[in-house]
Image (cartoon, rainbow, N blue to C red; front, side, top):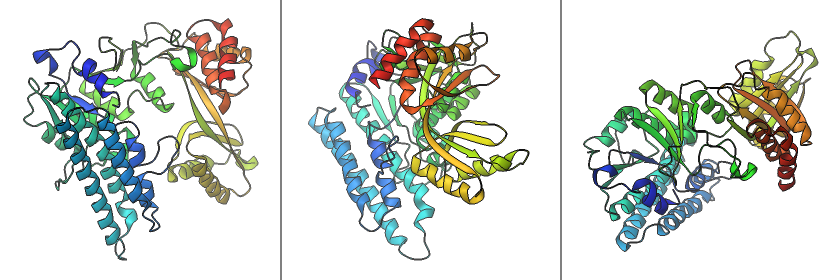
Length: 469
């Protein structure tokens, strides 16, 4: 979204003229970094307005953070809009939303200063309120820019701002698109939609794709397209080289699910389910190459077995060793209860007679809380954590590819120490566990061996990536 000017001239318009500009609906996310400032940083966990408000100790740090959000919103649209009238409208939009949110949070604090009201019971609603500010801003700015370019763009705000009605997601979408003429108007819709289901509560920051999928299903779209900065490729081009990666072109929802599990989300699994049930085709394209068909995602099996993509994710291994675990039920459920209680996402897990290891994606601080709980539950257990990475080779069908064996051989040639390796009987992915610092090198080695088909080059590729890391 921060490259909106380029998108205006390629994706939104390009060679389109007249009626060809329409019959489309765009669902937009916030400008880069805005949602991190509103909630918390997605990767580092640095607190945003929401986190500061939740832990406020009367120094009102959230006030400064909210002011900074307004400043960054202004910086974003000032770098994109050119006409003075558009800049004034965008500035006023930001001022109204930021001041409205500020007043709401102040009023809630005052209300909760009375003993009958608890701030904790309102935090889910506050998270919903704040998350919608970023998408509303970017959708409004996009609409201004397109209108200035002569396109009949229409701002569709699903964030529920100052709306007293309690509606479902379907009702919110239906009301927002009511009386929109798709033949002569181009709706620009907020990725966040306020509804009784609570999108943030159920999907957290994956809500925009859920909104997108439900709009596609509601309108009976011929195709749902996710526009990304790059093509959905066989690996990160920064790791294996732009000339080495291959565009997937065609894959299925099973692969998309595995990518989601590895933190490389092509589409949220719930959004994919909505599209599948509505029989709407899904496509992932490069937003800056609008003439390229991108990658089609459907339910079709692979024409031939093969690894399609290699990706990696840094994780924390939570290992519980208890000599008396053998034959005793309940250990695993207690661990799962602790992980669920602290909202820790499990990426993978393994177990043997007396050890259960969960590979999780969470901050070290959160995992330490889980460890404290488990130490109280199992005082005689040896519980440890360490930072590792999982590198995964994924494909619709890996039958006969010897991906596990060849992958291990490629790691050996590249001088990488594999701590663990997993493959399920379904043959859709193979996972290799290594030290966190070896992730980039392992991706390069696996890609050279399993996708480029140069098993002998894995040593050089892995060594170069390890040196760069």
